[in-house]
Structure formats: structure tokens, C-alpha cells
Image: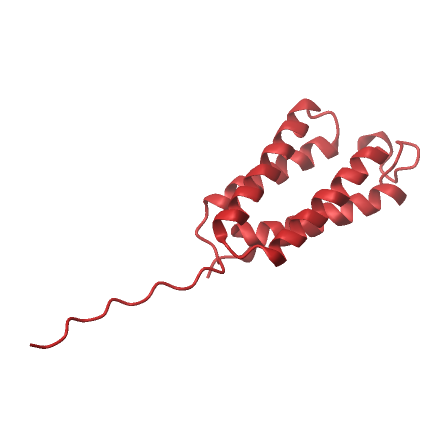
Length: 132
């Protein structure tokens, strides 16, 4: 059995929860400035980054619940992975947040390439030919 985070739906569920939690924590513990972060300048998010994490987390969680087709979930996971990759690379790995973005991007692409669980119906077994 494949781990649930190895599928597009699993990525949207777990990754969405991670983004939502990081976004909420960014308002209180990880920002919104380096002085306000418990990690100092090593890891802090601006108010804008926090809102982006919250919105993307909600979108991912909502999509995991509402989308029924694996193809749609894979497309959204790819889009979130691409966004995370662009943001992470644009930050030039200057903070833990940029590294987190790269990890999320890698995870998204890994999840959509897997053959993990999906909500698609199982293929039907072939019907044996009728006797003559």
C-alpha cells in the first residue's frame, strides 16, 4: 500500500494542512517580521507570505474534498508545485522558508508521478468469454 502523501489527493490534504498551519503560525510565531519570529531572521514570513500560505492551504484542502477526478487533483498539485518552485528559487535559498518552498515543490511533483491511492474506481476484471 502506498503512503497517502504519495498521491495527488494526499499531497493536497497533507500539503494543504501544512501550508495552512505555517500561514497561521506566521502571524504569531514565525513572523510577520524577523523580530517577531521565534527563529529570528533564519525563518520568518511577511504578512503577505502568511496570507498566501493560508489561501493556498485552504484551496488545497478544499480541492482535496471537492474534486472527484484524479486528473484534476494532479493538475492542481502540479500548479502548487510550480508556484512553490518559482517562489523558492526566486528567494535564492536565503531562508528556511525558501527551502520549505523547494521541499513542497519536490513533494508535489513526486506525488503526481506516483501511483498512489486515488478515488478513481478500481478497474473491472476482464469478463471471461461465454461458453459456446
